Amino acid sequence: MVIRTWSPFHPPQQSIVLWPHSPFYQYPIFEEVIHTSKFSIPPKSDQETAFIEEIISNFKNLDISDIGDIEKLERIVNQFGAIINQAWTKNAKKLRFSKHSKQWWTDKCSHSLNNYRMTRSLDNWKNFKKVVKNIKRTFFDMKIQEVANKSCGPWKLMNWISKCKLPAIKAIKYDGHPCLSLESLWDALHSIFNTTLNRQVDLNILSDIDRKPTSQWYPFSKEEFKQAISKCNDSSVPGPDKLTWHYLKSIVNQDDCLVNIINITNSCFNLGHWPNYFKYSSTIIIPKPNKMLYNQPKAFRPIVLLNTLEKLIKKVIAERLQFTVASSIWTN
Image 1 (cartoon, rainbow, N blue to C red):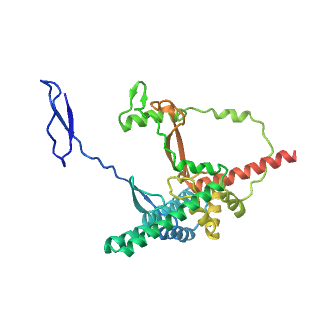
Image 2: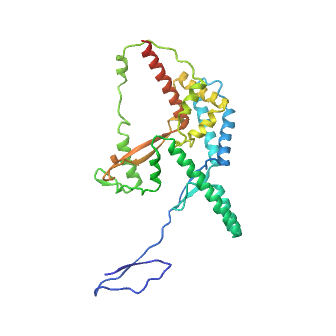
Image 3: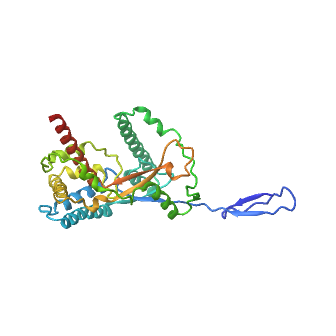
C-alpha cells in the first residue's frame, strides 16, 4: 500500500502500487498559517514618549489631597489604573510575530523598506541596507554591553547561536486522564497551584503572642521611593497594568506624581486597607528545567506578575520594616 499526499495547488502524480489488491488513499494537506500578534509600545519610540507623557499629565490632575475613607481610596486607585489603560489603548501598536520577526527591527527599517518597494530604485535599496546595518550594529552593541555589565559574563552571548533545547511535551495528565481541553487543563493546574485556597486559618494563635512595645509609624518620604525604584531592573516583565519599571521611573521622577503615590501609600496604612486594584495579577506557566517528561502539572511552575505600582509600594514597606527591625536589634 502506498499513501501519498497532495496539495490543492499541485495535482497528484501517477500512483505506485507495491502489491496487488491494496487500497489507495489520498490525504489533502493544507498549509496552516498561525498568526501571532500582540499590542505593544516600541521602546524609544514616539508612542512610548506620548504614553508616558499622557500618564504623567492625567495623574498630576488627580485630587489625592484628602483620602478620608476606603471608598475614595478605591476610586482614586481605580482612576489611576484607568489612566494607564486609556494611554495604553491610545498608543499601543499591534505587532504580528512570525518566523521572520527580528528583535532589532524598528520603524526606521520599515520606512526605508517601504521607500524601496514604492520606487524599486537602486539608491533606495542601498539606503535600506545601510539603515538595517546601522540598526543591527546599535542593537547588538547594546546587548553586548548589557551582558558585559552583568555578573553572568560574556558566555551568555553563546545562547544566541546555540540551539534551543525544547522539552518533550505530551498531553498533561491529571487523575489519570489527559487534559485535551482548555477547561480540563485549567482545572488541573488550578488544583495543583492553589491547594491552600480554601484552607481555614485559626487566627486565635495571634492572641498567644506576648504584647511588645510599639513604635510610631512615620509617613513615607520621597527618598524612600526614589531609593527603592533605583534598584529595579527595567527589563522585568510587567503585570496586568502593562507598566514597566522604565515607565514608572519616568513617572516617579515627576515630583507631583511622586507626591500622589506617597499620599496613596500613606492612606493605605491610615485606613488599614489594600485596594483591590493592587490585588490583580497575571499568572504565567513555565516548565521546570531538566525534567524527563512534562506530562504532569507538577513539572511546571507558576510565575505571578503583579501591578508595578503595587510592587514599588511593597518594596518601600519591606525596606522600612528591615530598617526598623535592624535598628531595634542593634539598640537592644
